[in-house]
Image (cartoon, rainbow, N blue to C red; front, side, top):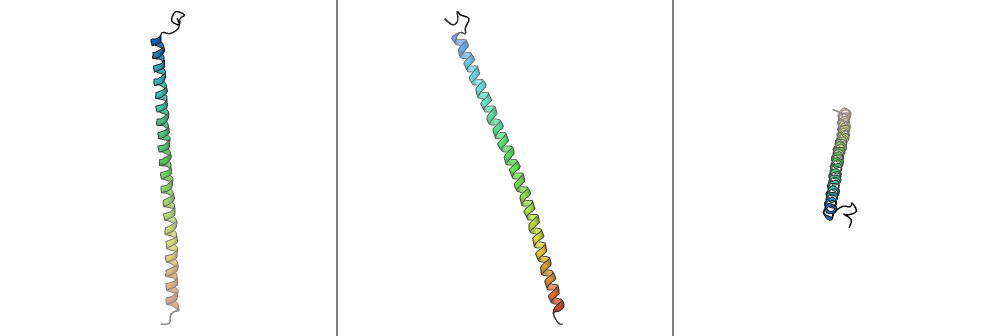
Amino acid sequence: TVQEDGGLSPDEVRKIRAQEQVRVQVQREEKERQEREKFHRQMQLQAAEDAEARRQNQKRNMKAIAFVVGVFVFLVVMIMMIKPG
């Protein structure tokens, strides 16, 4: 038999296989955990970038509104100056 030749007993083989299965499962779970963390970080980064883009758009919109209001006020003042009376 294998045991007589210095090999492993069936119990030892089962034990080693079970340990290997546990090791593989632990590695798989660790990889999945790392992938979840990576995905979470990517989502946080995307959310931060989106928020910054919204702030920039709001800033640009406020400048455009201020410009339009300024032009309107300028035109009203010019019309009042031209108006006789």
